[in-house]
Picture (cartoon, rainbow, N blue to C red):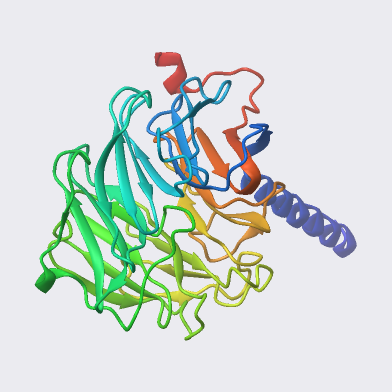
Length: 363
């Protein structure tokens, strides 16, 4: 066999290997725009199952689907039609907790699928501004807000959101001046495992405060996303089951600027590295590890990106941007929700010509 033939064969096999590798990392999800005809900027979303999703936003708007997005029901909280509901946490198709941000800050709960709502927390302090809520389980949860008197506001519930209490002052996290979070997506606070909680903060340092005892005591890490600019910091955080973490942010007034928009950690936030080689393509307000996969997705007003290497490198997705992200626990169905009533369905495309997965066959 000649040297030329060997060379050509080597090139052929190299190109084939590269093509196979590219195919193996193709993003397996598709996107579908949902027409809602709703006038609202969506900021909160929660999908407790593949069939059920709740979405909340401005103008007191809450949408709910119980059939995987085939139909959506618009819900109303009587008397609170002007509330800006920037976060919602749902347990199933009947039980959910919704949060209104500004003064007065409000938290509501429904137990009948949104037919009736109970006001379970209200605060009319002129400086109150709630940023997000998250639950450890169906009973215990946290809510947090911007600093008042140099203390980050931390609320706790032990009864599924039926009542809330402020953490004792000595246990409230110290703030740097008027430090606070971002109520951009409902994902600047997360729980992890049975007792860990993480909260992303904004100017001046982009800190990540954390608790390992369900919010009783707090400490902080530095993420590198804060540089003193008022609009920068940690807008969203997620941590996978192995302790890999991602934070995203940027400057919401400079949506196309991709400087300091993402950072990654491999030790539950102790150390962070800024994503610089292929970062998300601008300011991002939400990030999510897609359950049961190696994929991560992040979104912001100017676009959506995905990664399959724990957020080190990002690729632009072929869809519009949004404010918030949620996925069903099995990772098969997700939702992006954003401004002007926009909802985008994110679904796992079946490329096996109707072949069922092993899990589906069992059913």
